[in-house]
Amino acid sequence: MSLPKRWASHLLQLGTWVAAALVLGATFGRPGWWLAAALAVWLAATLYKLYDLDRVLDGEQARSIVTTSGLWAELLARVVRYKDKAAARKKKYHRLLREVRESTGALRDAGVILNSQNEIEWFNVAATVLLGLEPQRDIGQRIDNLVRHPDFVEYLKSASDRVIYIPAPKDPSGRLSVQVIPYSRRQRLAIFRDVTHEYRLERTRRDFVANASHELRSPLTVFGGYLESMLEDSEIPSTWDGPIEEMQRQVDRMTRIIRDLLELSRLESMEGQASHDFIDVTGMLKTIGKELSQAVPGLTLELDLDESTALLGEETQLHSIFYNLMNNAIRFTPEPGRVDVSWKRIPGGAYFEVSDTGVGIPEELIPRVTERFFRVDPGRSRASGGTGLGLAIVKHALHKHGATLRIESQVGTGSSFRCDFPSDRVVARGSARQAVVQG
Image 1: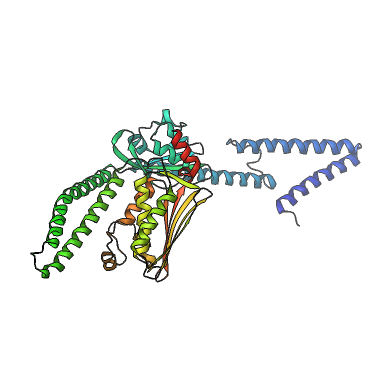
Image 2: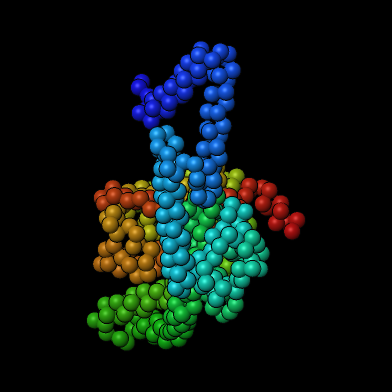
């Protein structure tokens, strides 16, 4: 490996200096002293140039190596070049930081940077408006000490990146959406968005649906009563039996739609999570299975239940989840078919799953099946008595229990609907009963 030219030149100068000292020593005597003196002078000059180089690194003007050449001039040029690049990068970073602060300052959404301990490291101007934060006072504070809503506190502990909704700290009648996104190993970005307008519109819609449904129940009840009387009235010609029966079916269908709309409105209007009442899931599923299997005797309904596991939740909501999923599987499975129902405890929670050998769902429609009134096959759904609201009710009821819904399906093969419940909702059946009795 050859030496760089600058180092070769420098070593050549050193060799020349040593040779000159030895020649002088040989000429005048005492060559050792001449060599020592030459090396001392060389060392002093080197230290002086190192001192000047250190001054250059500190930002001062060099003196001894400014006009020199060779190794020291090359080192100086490289130091100056690196310093210029560092200054340019620093200037660029300051400009980018200024632009980021200006752009985040123009955002209406509040952005808060948190460390691994949920302590505030930085926030934008919108955070002072939406959350009432102050830089001098709140930097370094834990955000759950400043935004104390229980749902937000639990959300921070869960380390999830889903979106939740909480009352606005400065205006409890308003609403904020919150999402915490990890973007490094020790930092997370919390985004708070003012959704008060959308929340109030949604509440108005829910109130309208609930009020309209309540108002429609009474006339439908009257219509149904008159139609039943007309079917039993022998004086009405038999030619009217068909139309009256069809009207009765439509009244029954409208009654089911209104019932489901009211249930959905109730779920949507509920604040916070579902209650933590003890629910005997095994007993509930056996009752539902017995009812549905009697209605459709041509299908095979198999229950695989973990009788040692129960849930903490709200009974009506959980019944809606189980009944709707099992009923849907049976309605969309032609005879002779098979529906399998499972309830199992797993690490991290428990799951309820319904699998069928039914008609299946096209893959592109699976994300939409939980929308209100969405039907994969509208004609078949209406003929089987469906309202198009069952899966929407399931989705909202699962959300209230902190659970999730997973759907897998193939057209012509069948579908699988799986509900995963978190561990804090799952209990041992015997211990839960004992706790309820003692409570």
